[in-house]
Image (cartoon, rainbow, N blue to C red):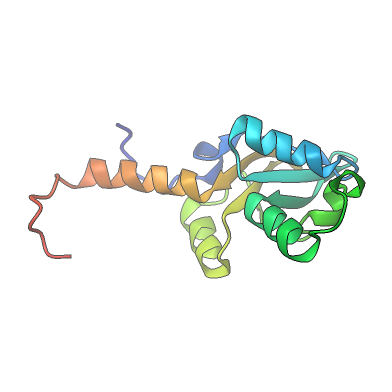
Length: 147
């Protein structure tokens, strides 16, 4: 079990080398990546630069609610991406990113290192770290502890 003495940087807890798509990739490719790798967020790049993100929630909300009669074969990643994703530097303290994600109700942050896509920090990653910290700092409860 990892013991944290200082607040970790995002780069040390993110999911490294995430899958990504290009703005011209078909929506079917985005869905395939999500299904095949059981991921919920896919960064979108254009010319090697991150320009957006597609979340599973937004993808299906858009397709089901707003574009139910559209042939998905005609849709590209650029058509469905959020074009102002939350992007942070590799060496940003985790607490700052987690707080901002909570304030903005975000499920992920894209992590860059030297202006290149390095990883993605998801709410799941944050929950995993929180569990590690709680396990290392506190003894198990007896079941009758007050909340």
